[in-house]
Length: 200
Length: 434
Image 1 (cartoon, rainbow over the protein chains, first blue to last red):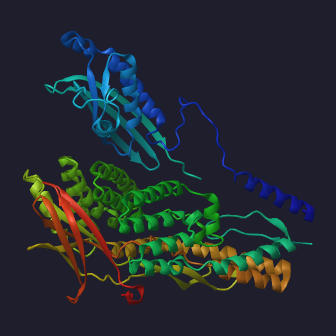
Image 2: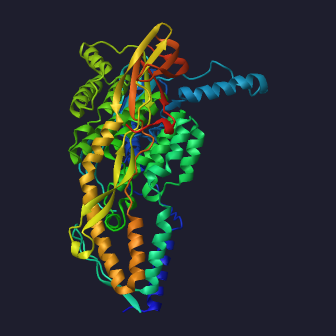
Image 3: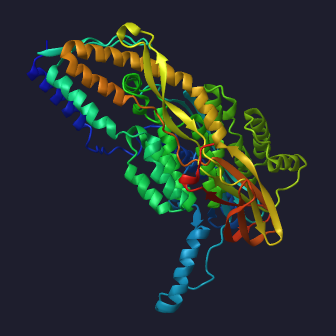
């Protein structure tokens, strides 16, 4: 038989255990650490796509072909990346990675997108009124893009019971704005087997 | 001194290990149960204020009331479903979808079995189980999210919902053999979404599935003519016309009240021959609007019923009731054993308190997505591309005008649909049960 003191001890232990879970816990982790929680698209998927696209886009011959033909560095603008998948995916993460790789390589120029340009033009218009003549920037000196980057994210989900096979395919294409020719296509496929917990 | 309370297997076959409990502790437990449970009014009673504020078009007041209800823990899904609905009715589509997404996440989480909750449901009552949403409610979230996206101009976002819905509906159909879970209405909406997103093949498949779904679920209204016309047009290879699509959340969906039924005790040696069991009772509420005329200038269009939430709710409860009663019988067997043991070990007073505690704790699970409409009406008005003022006029079954709502400067793009929505509810006092 359990005595009064033992019962009090058990109750205190249970209370202590319950309360220990109350504080928010934060642990810093490396950005390359793979941590899949729900099986949804996450930072690792984005990183894998950007790594593949950067490697492929900078190693294929379209940059050299452009340079040889025009004797200039190609200028790229980011167009529409359509999400045709089952999830609301933020495409900005891997597109920003790709932009950074283009710019930092020194082999590809990236021009501001439509929405970014609006802000810059506003600033330029403001300069016309308020900036000194020496520092004022003229209108009509923008660089026109040679290529537009467009793409899609598609997915196929096969689900039964608590298990799902999720397949993602990211396709990016560089289209010559002058003649609509596709000069580069990159592709990354990802596949996941997601099993939902049966008990909680 | 200690009491010896032992539980034995009930109808569900579970066995509680024998254990000793000091008298002061068992007394404390009974006291706490008696103290806490009377505050647990059934869910449907506690949300009536929320319904009143919504019916009176006081959406800010309704949101405040909902927040004050503090639906959390096992009821958190209900908070998000209702908040998402209120924000949608208010036109705050982005915030509404945040709550619907939160509800969907919880539905996924609560789909996994919790052993402690299962035990509690056969020892206390069903309300201790986390609310994961009825299958029909789980499907409806996708329609409201998709509508929120198209109403805020994000067709691709709506198409994501449409694709998610397809997976979800197949899983729900796999788990529940119920014809009324065809998701026909959601598929009808999704077919429009796909077509707007330029995915005509997906649109055609979704239209065909919606037609089949409406026929299969047989909810007492015909396949919407607008859907049949869409399918015919698409099969003929014709493009989508420019039009306004009006959606009305009509009245309030069914409510569940508590009903006490008498069932035979399968183990009469442990107590009385009959049990009183609290089970949910379906109450259909009147749907105020019989038809909508959507007009712009000289052009006008009549509405059609595209979803009957009342019908689906009634069939859903009918399907669930046998399992609810079976769980209730198992629970009452366990409770009667506990009362008998309390009386044996602690005397008449302990038996009395245990009896009070078990009676008070016997509550029906009356939870449901309160702010779902009773049915959904849709009116589609072909219009030329440009800006239009729309007027929706609501008629009762007897032909009286219940109200009108004007929508100014609705932009209809060439070959596109402009979605507009509204809701109409009778004040709860006038929502007589049918």
